[in-house]
Length: 384
Image (cartoon, rainbow, N blue to C red):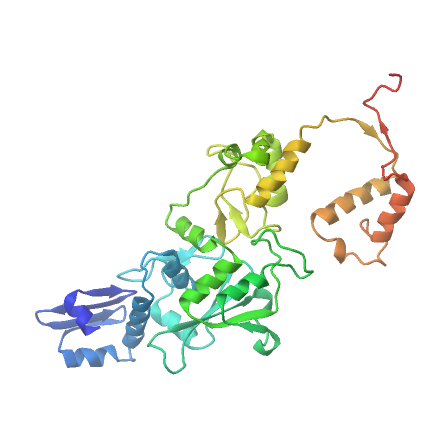
């Protein structure tokens, strides 16, 4: 550190160290010492009474991390509530929160106290990330270690979880939901629990997070720096080719319905930043996810193809005979399926409209042997 200070001043996270004609100067927000000899400086840097040693080991760790200005470094600093961008002076800079807003970053002493004890925790989607100071032999001063687990397991005993230490293992954990069904959307709120990654270095932490939620760290960092490149619906739809060439024919109102169906917090943890066009916002709220969605995803495009085809059908007027309770039951069935609540309705609870036996009774009563809901297409002239 002395050699570094002799070459150029150090200004990092509230620590200032420089060599002058009168000797060395070392300063933190707690105070300043000037005119120090090399011996005096070494003693000052090891002094724990005013947290100088914490500022020094903090500087040393982030020197080893490197990559100033990169998404990886910014994310690691966010994990411990440090200023996302390195600051030379005080630490009043804001840093992104789980809700995408801002809060005051913590000073080095305010971070070191929890880092030394139980660690600092952040949530990233359904991930709970904990960072602590390393206390094992062979580590460098100020080294951090990171643990990742499902938010539902944050208080679980490690002995009850499946332990991993290789980031690539996260690929297998994210393939299927708790019922074994394939997860086509990695940012869907259906991540399985029951596992933990422990003792990770910084790079391994970021790799693990990226295996769970691809590209989220990079896009979050772009947004933090104000250069998130957003591709809105129409420009994305117009560049589709092949079987997806039809998606740009989806009516604007149908794009609203699509966003309401797919791009909300209950279905995706990303926060939708794209609109219909740059100056034409959708009325549907984009959500509160911690990481941004910069363009319609492949799942939305695939669904939009089907809806674009369906929207070309002509509307007809149908007449069905239903009791008020049966109408209400159909609405309850629709809501239960759309919200994924069908499995929550007990077979014995026949008071619920989406109860399986209620549904089977309605089908027996109102659906013919060919599976058609009994009714009349009144838009067709019966005399023709």
